[in-house]
Length: 378
Image (cartoon, rainbow, N blue to C red; front, top):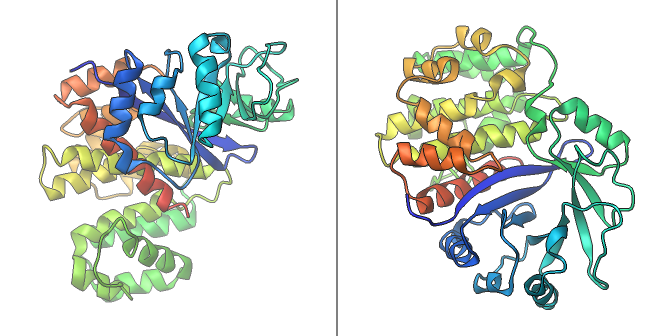
């Protein structure tokens, strides 16, 4: 792989664990490689939420302005670089351009430059149990699990950044009735069941029918006509394509107030894997990659073990092998998707090398997948 910059990401959530921003970490050897990567991916930039841009271990300098910074971007300024002359030169330029700034790695007592509006403050929650004295909305980073996040909020934090929500969730239980209903639908579609029987299941839950049609008519599907009914959808798309969108229903079925970040993660994984897979697989294989990525969060989303869920479903063997055993044809794509969710880019570099992918392919697919996942949360 070349020395071009790679992107990884994490969500930013408020006290109720609702998504409020996306954090993008650019891993590059210098600012030139960072701006080159950002320029190459600009058309895929996610716009629904603010984006916190971290330069990883690099010092922010005016060279960053070689990239046309999107208006929803907040450039992260590490507290350790505030006395660096190049960072001091960058700050007024960002303010003149109307670009927001986010102070990271804040600690109590650090000297701050005057007349800078630090709206967001990122703090290592492991070393700072309380955000005491933070000059803006405080976000805890580095938390290990949901319990730690709840404690951080109780101690005064306004939210958090990172993947803490993947750990410390309620223990496994049986599938809820609405989840079982969607799995029944999925199995009917995979078996090419009678349209009338599938419609009867959908009629038992009007909300599911509405959500399914909204997904199918979303910009991500790219249809030229509006689909009015399930029967209409079958006539236009066929069962195979509908299976993918019914899978989205299952991923978004959780009523847990903290589920949005998990849903975003699952859908972004699926879309990313689908797009990367287009370089290797046919259309059916890519749709199975989407399902693999989307279903990789089902155990957490539905509060049941992955084995329990998959025992109820009719899925292709490569999907099951990847989800249960990290083996088979789809496993390396899932490892790549998960590697995009780390502050450390080493695993991502290794996974990209395994598939002989260049950074530009990964960065563009990742931003496009994130934009797609965000669009379905609206």
